[in-house]
Amino acid sequence: MQTITPDTTSANATSATAGDLAEQVMATFRATSRVDHNEIRVHLDGDRVVLEGAVDSAAEKRHALELAQTTPGVENVVDHLTLKNFVPRSDAELAEAVRHSLIRDAFVEKGRIEVYAQNGHVRLDGTVPDYHTKKAVEDVVLWTAGVTSVENLLLVTDEPFVDVSPGEVP
Image 1 (spheres, one colour):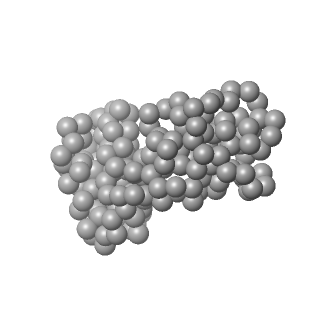
Image 2: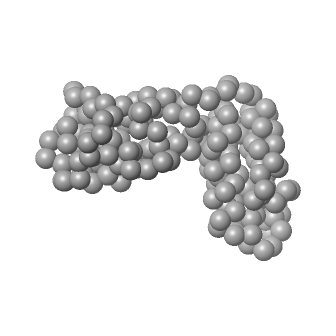
Image 3: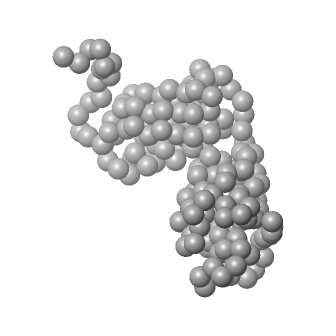
């Protein structure tokens, strides 16, 4: 098992060895400002790329995983990343923290989004006026302390959101 630590070189060629593949992933991290490559270690375990370290948010973690998975030659990614800002909260506290984060954000319309939380996972239901707002909402939630993942079920529409449980549909 080889460990690659961040350095200043970049590998753009196709992966010829395991070390090259791990370096390609690190080069991808270095090429973006959305991932702090100094926080992540990349190594290979057989044919799997393993990411380890502690990142600042669920948003950064998700982006690192997406970048690793889309690096040419990478077929499997193992996630051993942890969150630095993880704050253990009850489901009710986390849902309330997310609601407060959304209320404070200038791009989010109040009252059109329902928030559900369970063990760090947040599900969003409701409507937003456009795709930019849908993405902005998800980003705000991913940066909320205690959130580990987001299921964004927001619909883009001009119509108001009406919550109908499956048993109420005629």
